[in-house]
Length: 409
Image (cartoon, rainbow, N blue to C red; front, side):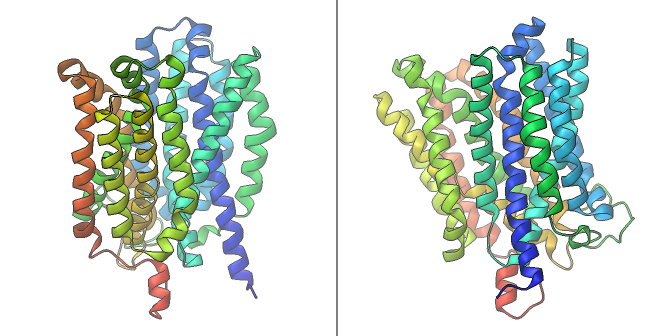
């Protein structure tokens, strides 16, 4: 029979999972209407790139400061606020009439999104500790499902000629804000992760707080994982079309199959994590992804290359959620700086994969060819697999292990 505490933790688990889905739907809704934004405001590719840069810069800066805010307020307060504010800013993107207004909205959206990205992962870590079982894979699967749903809704809205403003208003009023309000009420209390760690409540932690060699190494590993994800998202279609002469329709299947297999893997990832170690999941996942990259770039046939990208998706289903959980455990230790602080530092490093990878890959592709650049991702993934044992061997035990040993979580 469940106790009131366990029932609250179970409700919070589904609530924070839904928050991940809301976040995925928000980002996909913004991204899928980019062509409409370009046409509506007559923007150049360079101006679109500027907006993307403003979003990324604001997000990374806010990720560095939000850990201090969580120490004073708890992640619940920030998650509840940001999940309501972000849909309003999405509507702002729909009504902003010029490039300069779009820059302001993108800066605000990026900053608030940076806060949510850190705090929703920190809250998921807190729920995971309370339940003493893994939930991070399911949360990240929800993000992927939300992103797919948002992309489909956005594509449908564009197809029937619905304006960006009308699309964003309907989505926010009917789906996003009501869902955010309901989920916000079901999260764990603010005191769950407020003022945890070495810094007392109300004392602003220094810029060095949360940084350690292990967090940096985890961040580099996460950046490599996200670099490969960004490479598949941005360049698999180009590679299939230009290098293997696939049709435009078939070229898009590389990323579609990647996303399907990654989402499917995340749906079963928590059960896998209950049966094995973080080290093994990292090793097997990144090694599998490396094999997938090798198949994708070595194949002379588009169909086999698409299968390779699907294998990459399956391999990259669990590494990032596992890394978030391990990093949260480091910060959640009694002597640590707090889960939100370490997650913030980790997220900052991993985001470099998303922010820098497309441009870096494009530059090197001009120099040596896209096939060789994609092929270089395989040894990077193998390096993560080799490092996994060394980095995770001395990690803080997760709450499930501490509970089994009779140690207070």
